[in-house]
Image 1 (cartoon, rainbow, N blue to C red):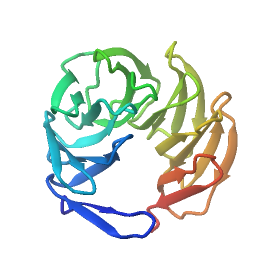
Image 2 (cartoon, rainbow, N blue to C red):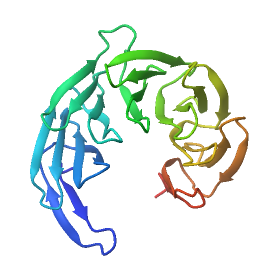
Image 3 (cartoon, helix red, strand yellow):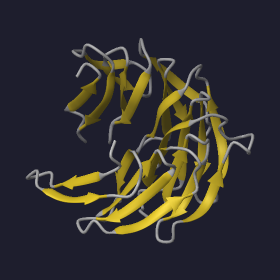
Image 4 (cartoon, one colour):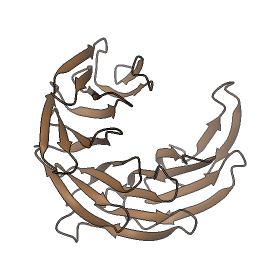
Length: 258
């Protein structure tokens, strides 16, 4: 990987600008309300640029390992990043100052690589998943740990908040998609794949959740009951990513089968 980010116009395919700075880029994330792009890298840094000018705005240094995930909060006022070093940092995007930091030094937090991150729609809560098989619920306003979701027997690869129900979901290499009540932190139901779960996505306005797996399938579930609603088959290898349209009617999938 060359450590460069290239920006293109989606309508025309026209090249806009090239952004340079970090080492190998792991993920990118757009600001929810402006043309600002964030990227995390294997060199433990996070970079922010203005688009289309491509001008550098800030670099965020505070992790000691690859930054596995990161994003702006939905209100655009903060940045949250997580790392292989077992740390979570909440940042001020304007000053690159760390507002809150959680690490494995706190026995209530993760003791292994943090693999994934999600933030709720009102920007008050974050959820992290880890190779230690647990997920943590974090108060982003004060940086406190609210609780732990513990039921998986292998690493958690994907987490997500429902936008219209008080539910969260965790997907694991153990093949289970667990649905939890945010307020009580109790397990509501479990949906099962025949292989590791790689990604999940909640439906925008229905009680449905979609997941993809190394079992070569993409499946839709009723989050209230755990009942399977739909299954898409066709890939010859692990389905590693997918994207759903907001109405939930169209799904695009990507697989290791090429």
